Structures are given as C-alpha cells and as structure tokens.
Image (cartoon, rainbow, N blue to C red; front, side, top):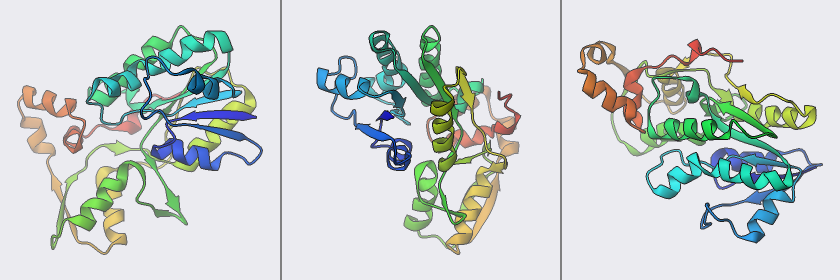
Length: 260
C-alpha cells in the first residue's frame, strides 16, 4: 500500500507520515513554494502514484490569498485531477464545520471546501476536534496547545491569568487520528463524513491548568461569562470572527454536537 500525504510540514501531516504502518510506503508532499492552482507535473505524479491520498494541508490562520486557496479550493483542485486517476482521497477537515457560531476565517474556509467537494466520489472527510499529543499520559508541547506552553515559558509572572471556561472541547489524541485513517483505508469505508470527538470533556481552563500544574506555575480563573452576556452584539460578532485567542470568549460547547 502506497500513501501520499500532503501538508507533511504541519503537526498532523508530519505525525501521520512518521507513524503509518511499516508495510505502507509513504510519499511526503510538501506544498510550500508550489503553485497550488497549477501543480507541476512532477508533484502531480508524486501525489497520484499512490493508492490513497491524505490531504492534511491547511492554513490554521489564513490571511493571504494563497492561504485561503489552500483551505477553500485545493481539495476541489485535487478532486478534479482525480477524475482521471480515481484514487481514494481522505481529507482532514474540522469539527467546527458543525458549529453555526464558528464564523472565524479558518472554519468558514473549511466549510466552503466541504461544500464544493460534495459532488465528488472516492472521498472521505474526517472532521477533527482539538488535537493533543500525550506520552505516558503527559501532555506534550505540540499542535494547537503549544501556545499555552509558550505562554508559561516566555511570560514571567508570579501568577498567570486564564479565561474561564473558554470553549468546552472533547479533544482526541493524535494517535487516534492515525488509527481512524488506517481503518478507513483497510475497510474501504463508504462513509462520506466521519466526525471525531474524544470521550472526555475539557474546557480551555482544564487544559491550561493541567499544563500549569506540570510546570508548577500558579494560575487563576478570569470568569468573563457575565461580561460576554452584556457585551454589545457588534462586539460579540467581532469576537466570533477572530482567528485567535479572543474566540474563547464565546465559550462554545463542543460536547453538544450531533456527531455521526
């Protein structure tokens, strides 16, 4: 079995490329520096020489036209090329696509990508929640939560403030993504969309407190729920559109998602 993985310079893509079963041949596809709207023939050959293509390439904080093309149009571009090759494509999206209140640039761009891909065959979409990495049950400074580690390492304070509760997540360990993809490949599943969530509910504060305890740092809660309730609607809308930490003011409960 040969697998092409795009986005191998990112957290998820790099992990997948390093942890596929040993009997799988992995072709790493780094798209940096590529013309995403018109890939060169060598890159196309590398991608479609495999039995399965995993598209993990994405910009988590899209700003430029190239960022938005990667999130919104690149999957559609691959699928159009795949009309000729008819290979199995697994696309990694976000569970935020199920949340109406998520209107930040990243989520909206992934929603557009999914909408444009609905007409295509040979496609499985895996929607991912917050991803963490643990070793011996200890959180690692990898992926989205690396910001918390950096905050505790770089900012010198006697006590660290943190928004409470922040979003309520059901995070999954990155190992589970690997297992899910392998199951999709082996079973040749016909599922068009797979929504992944973990079993344990954790708010932003829980995650930050766990990291702070590891580093023996003092933290305190800044409960802003009351202030969010009385905020003007225009400011709330502005917060929801943010692609940064301010998004946490909205305190969206991911555990209420209807997954299938």
